[in-house]
Image (cartoon, rainbow, N blue to C red):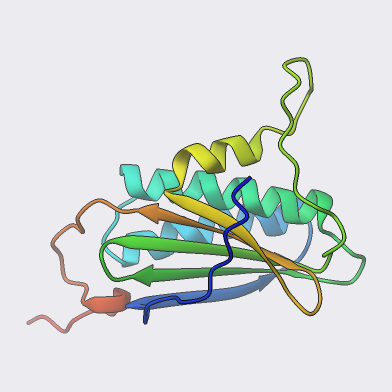
Length: 159
């Protein structure tokens, strides 16, 4: 596991922050909202960047819902579109005492989500918070598609 702590994040070109219920439905919504936001930022549905971001968010959100859940507490998803074509994904949950672990037993039924995150992300790690933790990953994005959207997914007026 990468224990690197993120201390300096460049000023984002775009940001999406959501609080979602710590349920399977909340985890699914996190993935769908990621797909929609990446499309708005010029990385279309079905493209490599959008698919990769969805997989990373799905794994981190599933972990937050399954292992980081406390009754009555939500989890947070934060997407940052950083300069240099990087997407930073942050998923925060309320359980700081549950440490991340990577399962290496080939017969285990689960536990491979963080392996997938490690393969898909250029870097990832965990930041402890006052309450809970934030698991983050950074993904290299392909060039943006040309289109009517400006920086940060803002639509430009066309005539």
